[in-house]
Image (cartoon, rainbow, N blue to C red):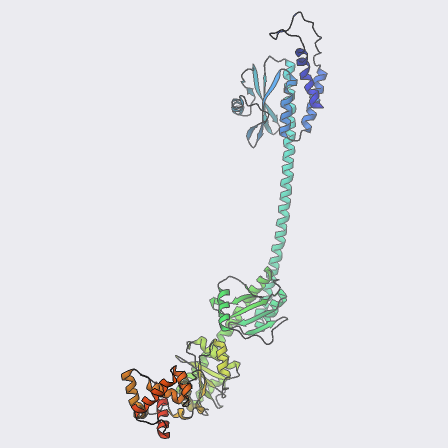
Length: 592
């Protein structure tokens, strides 16, 4: 309504003038009938129009609408036209969409050149033009570019100035509201940010409190004398999950919490090594199936595994933190145990080395008591050889664990290719071998056990017996397993410590012609004869073990009779030939 009221002031004169009769040239007819001129707008009319415009400007939703209203109502102030309008946005003057396209570029440049001042603007076809700044307390809000075809009166200029002031005031109010909205949004954003920061601070404080609690608890555990069990109890208490410690070979050392497997599964050495290498390549605890695992590895050496059982995948950051602290607390404990084991192993090794070489009894008894071992009992010397394992400290520890697992009390040392045990009881026929097969993941090993030793002076000799038992086993049909010296029969006299020259003479007497024949013709007559005796004279079994046909075996045995001049059917010849092949294979090392 305010809009139409203010427009009516501008349209009264133009409507009246447009109703006058005109001639063909467009001029007024002097003789024509004159209509009464409408009354000129009174000051009251101007006042009402300004009040209506002021209300419209105040109710406008935004700055663009205010500028549009002002441009639409400029004509109500007199013989004026709004050529263009500009709003100051972000330090730049942005033209109104209502600006005319004609002369827009020139007008825009002129307005910007004024740099915030009022000034004249030239528009073709208009006798007067001026850029009027729309200013508020905060500075320039924009411009109205107003032109006129004729000279305006003082009243018209005053009315124009009033419209400009009202427009500037409305813009100031709109910009203030806009800033208030922006300030309110910024305040809301700052409040949200403060709330977020407060929550983060609370979370950090809670995390620090939990971390201090974990650190304090683990420090108390480390200071106690309960060792690994205290650490798994603390970890179970912190996480609510079953906690466990395994050695690096996968054997359980401690478990706290429900659902403990009984019996605990035997580890697979190959899978265990693969798991350790996979976990070691990653930083921090790693999930492996239903467990969250942390390696205990001070200075890079893996000493054990600490884990929680998390079948429901409930572990969070607190669980990881507790597991890491527990692993750090467990590292000194396992390092201490490892150091003790190494010292004990070294003392054992030095004692056994002296016993095997021969030492005085008084010193040996005193040193054995120092390491908690009784040398006054009867003993057995045990030699362990696993061709696919180097006889280093790691394999020596493996042998020691296997011996302990089967109940053997022993002292231990190692040589270049085998490990030696001095045990206080006769080993079980298969227990130690089976335990080592599980530990190493392979059955390709040999164990030799001496006869019982009742005197420390006999230990060096018993050591030779155990070595001889290993050699006999390695050259027998079943190369892997355990051999007891006192069960070797004839082989007890065929080995180190006997007169090799006599044995060589014996072998040459009975097998010399066959050995020479094999050497000249690259055949295997002696090997065939040895295997024939090993198989008890069974043709089929002998042929299968040599991977030859039965008829080939018959041919070879006949050639052996012809070459050696010995009759295999003769009891004496057969016995001497069988002993000769054993000596050739076990003592003299076979071919070569």
